[in-house]
Length: 65
Image 1 (cartoon, rainbow, N blue to C red):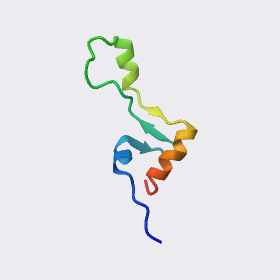
Image 2 (cartoon, helix red, strand yellow; image 1 turned 90 degrees about the horizontal axis):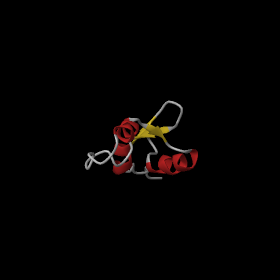
Image 3 (tube, rainbow, N blue to C red; image 1 turned 60 degrees about the vertical axis):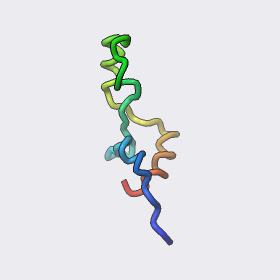
Image 4 (tube, one colour; image 1 turned 180 degrees about the vertical axis):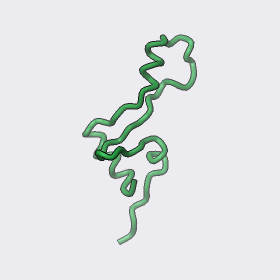
């Protein structure tokens, strides 16, 4: 049986933690930052953990990571 290909775009966006959870960076933090409050930008800097439902989907994209 052939190997499953890893989704390269998903591998760049998500990192696997030791507890089989995935962390990711928030969107909307790249440009047009002048109209966003400092508090909002500060919260966007923090990495988040995927929900369990989305975790299963990402596991299919990243079989070996």
